[in-house]
Length: 137
Image 1 (cartoon, one colour):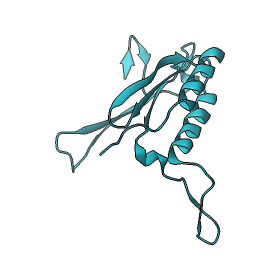
Image 2 (cartoon, rainbow, N blue to C red):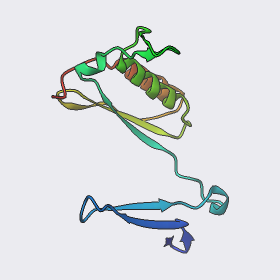
Image 3 (tube, rainbow, N blue to C red):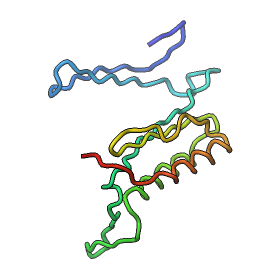
Image 4 (cartoon, rainbow, N blue to C red):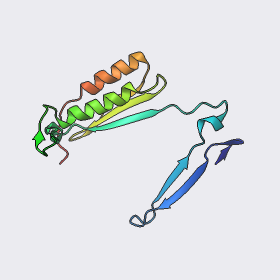
């Protein structure tokens, strides 16, 4: 794939799904950073979609070595919050994040925020403010 004389992708694959007539998966492999020359790689923009319905207050049990369930006091939403917070903490200052939650209804819990120091702090606060709401039935 070329654009204005610059290579934009090393490979493009079209994959048909035999179970979904008319649908095609497009896989685009971008060139490696070294082959970009002076062009900077695109920064990331990540939108997290988190279930906050009542089922997410289910205990996040784990199994011990004997196969018995053990509760450590966390619910599924606690685990989801931790996963999102960990990902946000790993982002670069030029990356962006947004958060959509859904229970009975979907809602934008946090619009796009740049992950500089202040933005990352705000994003982590918004993630931690998520609470159980609604039902997905």
